[in-house]
Length: 273
Ligand SMILES: NC(=O)c1ccc[n+]([C@@H]2O[C@H](COP(=O)([O-])OP(=O)(O)OC[C@H]3O[C@@H](n4cnc5c(N)ncnc54)[C@H](OP(=O)(O)O)[C@@H]3O)[C@@H](O)[C@H]2O)c1
Image (cartoon, rainbow, N blue to C red; front, side, top):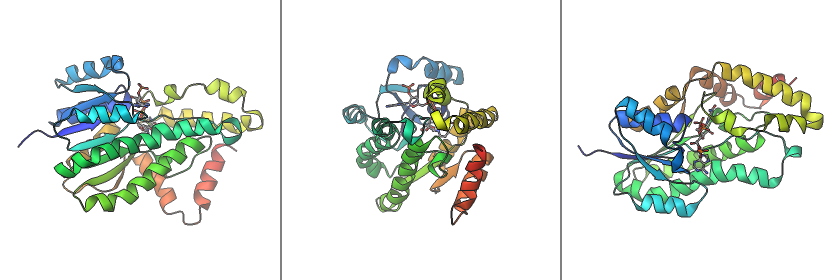
């Protein structure tokens, strides 16, 4: 059987890095993409330690030309893992519409650019699209309005695309991590500044940050989250939605059975009371 090729976005750290190593260990040819290939050191080291190799390519998900150029160089493509993404902390009165647009560019339009460019090759291979969303793509969370909006958008987009793509043999799935111990939190940055500028929202934001610290104290490893990606890539019949941990399953279940929204409002309001 010929070796299958998977392209993964955002592999310089965290879940993407772990997924690149895990898929290579499972026998895939891995096109590990990142917007700045000078940051490939950690991935190359992890791959070497695991005794596997990956092909590094440049791809910035917010730049359609970079996406097209990256895909144009591939002979075949059997799966795409839309992993690249970035968090954002703040509430509406604190942030500009441009800030929110920037969050959408990376987390939503980035996924769109890559998936749209990849679909012709995936139709050819009867391949798969696996997109890392978040529990924040199911449950809206305080001070994550822009990030959750982008992840909700991805979830709606993929849930709608899935039956259509299935008619041409392409399986579409989403992966919903809860807290994962990656570079995610440090890449958001600026917590102190956001808190200083929070004005009337400062007490609620301080409570949210304390609650987040507790949640991340029990965070899953990037390898644990990556295992769910590999399972979807290898499943005979991949399901549409998976959570990567019991905590993520319990959290999203609260929303999925919350017909009138009161359960989630009570839960997240208690975080910042
Ligand atoms: N960690 C969590 O708790 C958590 C929870 C739920 C969902 N997620 C989701 O999981 C995915 C992976 O995040 P992570 O936890 O592994 O965090 P991470 O360590 O910060 O990794 C994010 C990756 O995305 C890349 N990226 C950011 N903007 C990009 C762009 N414009 N083009 C290409 N790559 C870009 C980053 O590259 P640079 O190194 O160049 O910045 C990095 O490789 C994200 O979609 C995130 O939203 C994370």
